Image: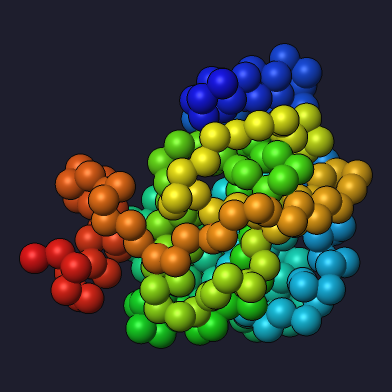
Length: 234
């Protein structure tokens, strides 16, 4: 199956089995799932989580508890504006529960430019489906890949920076096709287990301009700003 077929299969399965959680329906989203809080708690037991000082987490619903636990542990939380419409938000010393929601982190977080982004020790991404070998598919818009690519170009992450995702166990599939810009995950955490994937390919080294359309750049203000500021876009 291609990526879109995999997405549709997982979204449909999650709805039909009632594993999907608010907001529903989950079609077109990084799907929230019953057990997401348990997965977040398991993720917080990882040594990579415990020793990290700065953790980047996606802004989607199933990772809300992850964001709360990052802040509860006294760590710095880096969250991108949904769909990269604006800057990144940096949060610390704020109310964890309030700041874990989209409305909360946009109000309580400090808006920072790419020049102010700190070194990231651990990344948590949302997924629609993953494989036990670390391949991943999101909702199809490519924002996790773009965020990672920008951080990699800035030297804020490197090949060894661990990337994890929290998903329900039914989101694990046998195979997902990959492209050079896709970011493999090193760790999968479900509602019942921790899986170390040992990906067989490298993470992207930056932004691969040949895969970006003019439309994508235009509809992603932060990306456009970054490319113009760094001389990649005239």
